[in-house]
Image (tube, rainbow, N blue to C red; front, side, top):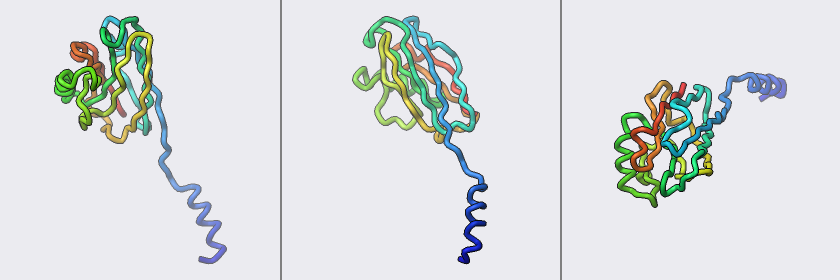
Length: 149
């Protein structure tokens, strides 16, 4: 390649469109009354990664009133929750290596917090997603809508 062409290629490469990774931060609370602090979480379509912080604002222990945050397609929530109850406390009330689970935190008790990070690549814009707590008896009331896009 002639030397004269190299600056042109460099200039062309600098102006070429490229994808920029963008991490979006979310925070949600959970309390001793089996409620999340919000019923809906939204993530912009240009987010490539989500960092979510879950704070247990209650005072009860993880064995009495533990909470986690689990994301799945809405149609899969019930089956995941039932399988999680069978899996038991040692598994965090979630089935191990279940491909239906998009993201999950650990179980936490009152005064604790946990943080996770997950890519949005597995999410479909406009898809029907639900976040929920898989602690026994919580998943049916302790849930919300997750909107991507």
